[in-house]
Length: 365
Ligand SMILES: NC(=O)c1ccc[n+]([C@@H]2O[C@H](COP(=O)([O-])OP(=O)(O)OC[C@H]3O[C@@H](n4cnc5c(N)ncnc54)[C@H](O)[C@@H]3O)[C@@H](O)[C@H]2O)c1
Ligand SMILES: [Zn+2]
Figure 1 (cartoon, rainbow, N blue to C red):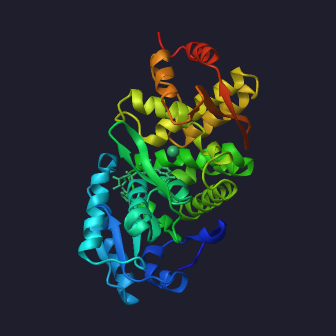
Figure 2: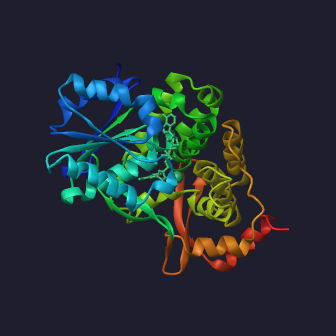
Figure 3: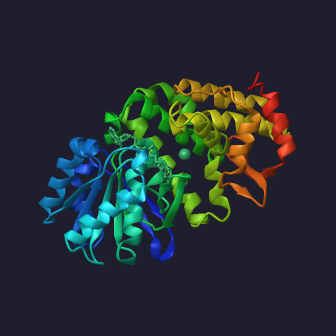
């Protein structure tokens, strides 16, 4: 196994590495043994991921002497609840897990957020290792220590910051994702280019066809570079009091789209793709960005098979959803607005101006 990249996430005593390598899930045991001292290990996953990757993970842990406890949870965002967390606690308590024991979250962002939250809270905090298996989880959710669950009134309303001890990313696991799931995740990859890395954006433009056809080398590069960019942002602002907010680029519009279409029509990444174009247009409207930059974004997103056009939604409803979003502070809605490819600013936009903009998009007729 050739390690493609070791990304340092430097957070003082909470520091850790992101290891990226094709085939890593089959060598997990050895990596854990050499990097973190751990007692017993519980593997939190879901039945589908267990079927695909459970056996190789179990085997690699057993090879170095662990007896992993598998904890499968039901699949899907609608099970990202306190009830599922309780099931993890039940398994850990039944098996007499202690403070010195650890947990592995093997799966997408849903499993990662829940495994992390259970680890943050069980016995006031045990160590955990992220093994992300979706694009979203590999480039975003597994790095940075945000953990949590949804509440019937909204997503991610209950949670904690708890950094993992290690992130083990195996890009080859992305090959079993559905095409749609894979493409949706690429929206977050494009996001990194726009917010902080013009060269990477150009790389994505040049290699979009190979990336779409799952070329191993190109995927590996996209995952590594994105993980590095995420790590840099997290390092500069661990608890999201400032700079880390730039990761929300495209997400204010994106969340409104997801909410108003009932979370069924768009995958999260698809809504973010549309949201990034809308945020770009808003930036043009406010005079911070040239229209040709928005066109570049549209061309790249389309080349990656992502949607770019706002659906037909009522501007007032969009405003209402945005106003109840977590990104509101003191009554003003904050937006991450690009100034060029590779640089963004965070700023409040008045309701009046926003209303005019939404109407000018001619999205409601
Ligand atoms: N903590 C953070 O910083 C952060 C950041 C971004 C997103 N998130 C959270 O992540 C969640 C979304 O994560 P996601 O997009 O990974 O969705 P997900 O975890 O629901 O996974 C998507 C689907 O893919 C399946 N799957 C996972 N890996 C697979 C593989 N290798 N092959 C085949 N199928 C596979 C899953 O079973 C699931 O059905 C949301 O709950 C979101 O709030 C958290
Ligand atoms: Zn996102």
